[in-house]
Image (cartoon, rainbow, N blue to C red; front, side):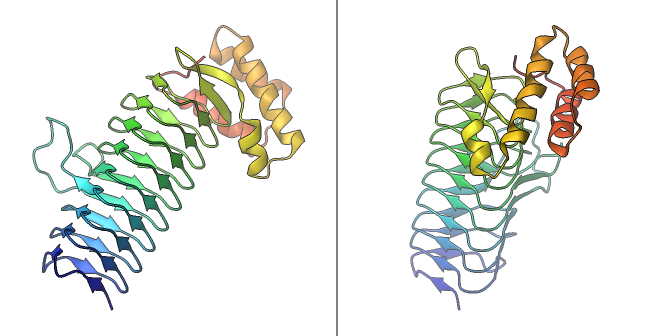
Length: 256
């Protein structure tokens, strides 16, 4: 049975699963779907088009599936998908999609800290930690297990690789490849994310292989030449293939 505060508003067309807790002054719009065991503390807004999974906790002031901050948006039917087991802290805002992709998606087991923003058509993976007041523009992709510190500004269309650590206060308009630390001003490559990789069970040999891949990649003035060296000199594990694929498919270029 759902526990709904008498001071909350739930639209009669909203679809709720079981055992949800909806606190006072929450607002749940029509065309929304909630799974099971979600907790919404006071003053949470679930806007039109939200699709929410199970076991998520939303803190006061969070606003999910907001109208996109995109002047090209003309009211088309789009959605915002939130997976399972996420902690979405105070005043987090997540926009729904536009005609470009139709969906904004946040995966599972993420911690989204206070006052951060995910714009329209972003695709975010699993196991992410995103710090206070960090802002992502539209159509950003963020792969699994990235740690993105506080007060970061990310340009639209960027791609953030998995297992990265990004220093607080950074701003960037190029892609950040996987497994690295990015920081300083301007934002640049600061080495392999040793601590993060060890915490996720990467062996020393694999970490060394990743380090060698970036040594070869950045030793060349032209990234294509670095990729050729990686492919010719290193063992092509899934992790090295991921690095090569990431760099070769980058549309904005990678940080150097």
